[in-house]
Length: 369
Image (tube, rainbow, N blue to C red; front, side):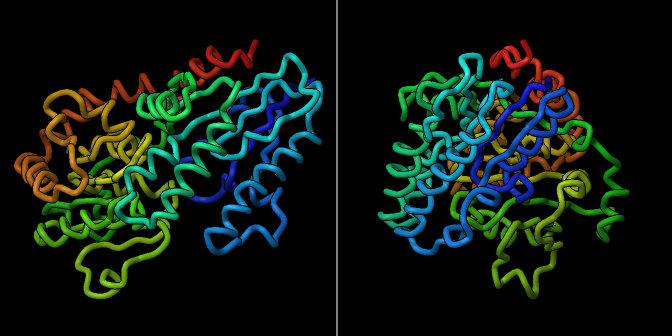
């Protein structure tokens, strides 16, 4: 009889997003290793009348209803075949009754809303901060991990789980598709994008939410008119970039096209106010492209040593420090590309390559025993 794993998460893994990408990789990887997997999320558990709640009060009700509906559905599918229940984010708090003694109870922490709330507090309302920190995080996230094996995506998240929730998390990083993200010929990538093969190219991959700090990106675009900028935005596009932007503006780029963007660029930027891991940092470095980033899970891990420590920018709002780092890379782009491939990619493979990540995952969870 195949072993079954239930995965509880907030959004449909088909959607764009870091956690969604992880859940998708997790489900596919478990299936490839002989497990049956059932996914529970907003798209297949929450009634339509709660799916598009508007306003803080309605969203607050919807948040707790989501955890209840998902937990209730998982309870119905709980059987002797279930060897593990893996919850994510705010939906693991529902107590599953009559769970088999052998079933592993696991929660994966992808950062904390408390950490995010503190980081973006100047850009959101007091009510918004209260909801993120005290409702989403200190209540729902903390309850979702209580009494479980808590796995984390970075040392930063491990520290937040300990400091905010008093829970002991285990950092196992994230699985990463190193077969997809790897160095390619820069000239060919530029040609495929309709860019000149000569001249500096900079890249930002992300969205315009407060957390991603698009204001610093906007300032860097203005400060470096000689750079051909690629902006790969998910979701809304600022009005000023819809007309008159001299770079390449792309919206909702599919995952399989991102390696071409990273390889076409001389550098990428990630000035996020809060980045518990930071897939874009890992993606850029895996492609051999240096990244200039504010402190986050991946940037702290991979940019700690010279010559890359100068590209770990302490203040996300310091346009001057980001600009100085850009000028440093553009003095010799080929040198930094070479150093990323020589010094960082091997460490990245050690931490994130699927075969290494799955070994750590099974050692931590015991699901394959």
